[in-house]
Each structure stands twice: as structure tokens, then as C-alpha cells.
Length: 319
Image (tube, rainbow, N blue to C red):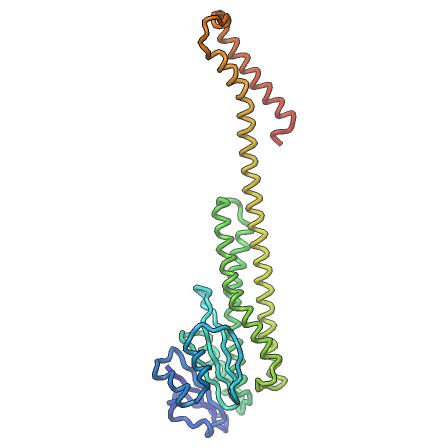
């Protein structure tokens, strides 16, 4: 599907025009949005706009790393949107010129709809709006970056729950959750860091057609990406701390179990020795014929067990 937003020299907005019937020179500027385009519609990138073949190839072969390329009077941007369900990156491409903006994406994106509505509203509310294609491109980038925040906030809430966990779950379950969150943070990092680097390049590029005021807006997006990057790094450190805490807790539990088993084994060692001696069937063992031999041996074993238990306790084995 291709939708068009045409702005006349008088500041009026026209929508719904067929792209093939638009003569760009007759208008102030246009925005053409290729949303899940067919193969026939994609051909218009070449037959109508005459974009560079390498840029068109980048649009067809997803997923490219966020980047900025220059082709004569057209700047080509590869941006990454975020799938909120899978946290996977989804490509959004922009072709920017002084009199048009072309957006191209293979998935339906709510961010693009929001940017589309925002630009229309801005033009209607400010007649003669001079923002043009560069301002529309900024709006798209801003909406894409804004969608990063809810996913990261959701992961931070999960981390907070893990940190305050009352121990109702096993260490194995908690460790699994920590590694799950850490993996999703890594997915976010793979999307956000390249976008941050791209925005830095835009800010320091002399080719992007923008004035000082517009650079301030791009700087605001860059600040958001810096904030997101810092949040991810802090959250990754928190997952590492939680992982180390759970490993220490598990080791402490294992040490406690081993200590208990060691005490039990040590107490029963002399008792087992006595039982082993009197379990031998030699004929010439005088104790076997004592009238009170059996209760005396049991008493001896009881006294040994109690005595060793008290000795271990006094020595601090149970602290």
C-alpha cells in the first residue's frame, strides 16, 4: 500500500492522491509512505523516484544495520523500529530530499501511523508550516525511538520483582528468569546502540539538510538514545549482580547441607565402628556372653553420640 501526503505551496494538505499522478515540482513537498508494498509498488522507487540501485537493494534485503548514505541530492536512512512482542528490530527506510520524503517498511508500524497523523496535525494547526520533509523525517525517528521506552521499562519492572523476590521460587527458576531478562536486554541493546551511533552521525553531518533549530530536535532524539543506552547498561549490571547473588546463595545452601551431612557422618562413625566390632561372629568374644552387654553397648553408643554432638556445638559447627 502506498499513501501520499501532498503539501501545496499555499500550505494546504492533500491526501489520497495516486503517486503516479503527482508531479513533485508542482507542490511544496510530498511524503509517500510505502507500507508493506507489493513488488509492483516497489518498482516505483526506481521508475518514479529514480533512486540509486544500491539504496533500493538495501530496501529489498532486510535487515540492514542503521546507517546514513548520500546519493546526490537524496539522503538514505536505514532505521530500526522495535517489535514490542519479540523485541526484534524491524527495518524502516527513509529517502529524504528538499522536496519529498519517502518511507519504506515491510511491516505495519503504529509509529508510522502516529508520525503521519502528527505531521498532518502540525500542518493544519500551523498554516504555512515550514518544517518540510526534514521535520517529517525527524517526527518518524522520534516516534520510533519513543517506542523503545515501554519495552525497557517493562524489563526494569521484571528486574525489580526479581530483586525483591521473597525466595518462594527455587534458585534455578530465579536464575532462569535473570538470564531471560538479560537476553532480552541484549536484543534491545543491538537495536538501540546502532541507532544511537546513527543519530550521532546525523548530528555531525554537513549533508543532512537541516537548520540549527532542527538539529536541536535531532539532538533531543540523541539524548533519548543515550538515556536508553545508560539504562540498558545499568540493567545489565543489575542482572549480573543478581546472578552473582543467586550463585552465592546456592553455594551457601550447598555448604550448609554438606556441613549437616558431615556432622551426621562424623557422629555415626564411632557408632558404626562399635556395631562393626560386635557384629563379628568370633566364638571367643567374652562380651557376647555378658548378661548386660547389649544394654551397656547401646548406652555407650548413646553417650558417644550425645557427647560428640555437644562437642561439635561447643566448637561452633552449627553457627
